[in-house]
Structure formats: C-alpha cells, structure tokens
Length: 154
Image (cartoon, rainbow, N blue to C red; front, side):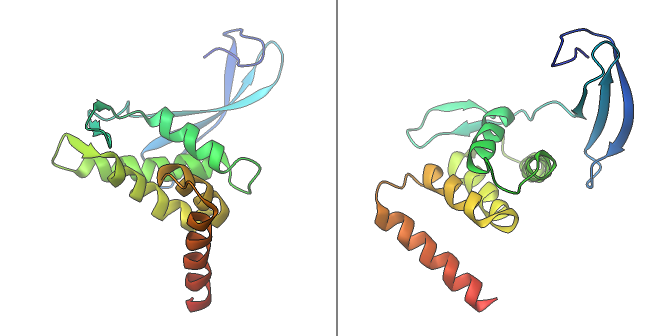
C-alpha cells in the first residue's frame, strides 16, 4: 500500500477492525518514511450489477461514484468517512441480495436517501436536490416542509 502523502510503499498497519456489519476491514496505517497516518478499507470487490439510468442507458454499478456524491452532499457536515462507508456497505449489502442483475437508478437513490436522512438531514436535503433534480426554490421548500412535518411527529 503506497502512502497517499509521500507515495512510498513502506507502510505499516497500526490497527485493524471489522466494520459493524463485518463486511469490510478498516485498517489504520502509518508510513514508515514520512510517519503520516491514513485509513484504508478492505472489502469484497464491487457488485456485478447494471444500473438502468432515467434515459434507459445501462452502466456498471459504481460505488466510488455514489461515494463522491455522498461526500459532496455531506461536505463540512458532521458526517465521518466511517458513516459514509457504513451507509455504502448497507446499500451494497441490500443490492447483493437482489435476484436481478439490473436495478433502476431511482431504487439505489431511494436506498441512499432513506439512510442518509437518518445520518444527517441537511446532507440528505443536498443529496436529494441532485438526485431528484430540484430546479426551483419551491422544490427545496416542499422537501423542507416534509422534513419539518416528520420532525414534529417524532
């Protein structure tokens, strides 16, 4: 494993832990050259799944693309990379259990949105604005009204 800071391959594992669900291993590493620390995750490689886009195109499921979207939505929010990894693991676990090898993009979006809402409501709103193609302030207002209603009924 190369150090993301200095690029040297001499790194040591300081700590290893299984994720909560046991589907990945989190490794804390330290570079033997520059002494900086970083975290890596070891998990089963992607799922053999085609995503059917809104326009009918099909493309391979891309965990990293989904992860980038979650990182953008939760930027400067109190959401850790560990929270994002856990959310992604849960979504992937559900997708692996499906019998079909194709899934509609809106199904994946709903899985993510329902879980993100529990982790961070503002991050949920930002992710939903892209996923649901918000194009006006009224779209945001409608979603905020739904969230407010949910909060008062809890």
